[in-house]
Image (cartoon, rainbow, N blue to C red; front, top):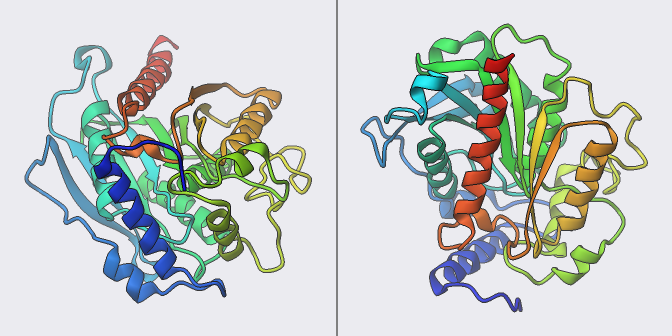
Length: 335
């Protein structure tokens, strides 16, 4: 059992989530999808503002259930006279590539808070899930969502600035956001400009067992048993965890794994997250590649603890994201 002391309400939420995941995943690498869908509560969209945000769903490709939930703040932007319009955050949810959706209650609430507190339009992408759809389907969906937005700006609020576009994601969504950023750097967009990548405790890995994996194995929300299963159902059959999708700077990755156009990156790392060492390897890899990368480490954070308002350091994460975005946006004005 974990020795981390949590408020009872947060402890209950995490216990329920872990129970549901264990009930839905099978040892043979399949998911009981009907049971999973039964437990996964979906938040309805709201044309009437809720906590200063309205939401709507937009179809990208119905044949593969590719769509996004649009979160639009209804209040006046911070520093509106100086910056004028709203940035876009294209967000990819977590869930080990196998669970949850853009409409799940937990992500509806999280993206709603981001839209309100950051005064940004959030585009939360619903991508295909493993094991029914393995690598590279999720990366293709993410890139196709960007192309759709680039060609259909009318789907966004009129006061959006497409030149202020940020990719973001947590856990598996952080992994997805990275690989989409690589693909985006090789594509000529007509309207969108990627200003930054916001990577929240991203899901990376490898065959090596790191110190943080062993030390933090029993901490909330994630265990080695979970991560091994997630990689097994996501990666191509016959692959191991050194596949470039998991081990970005590993032995099977190409030398030019990061394009010159890769955006500035804000990376969050938790001291109690079993993925910490892999995230630090990612940080060092970006630095060695000459990329602009900022590290925010919270020694008290476990995996994805930032998403829960009961977590004491919740405001730290939001403030760091706000400062990073403002810096990147003001840089475009000064240039």
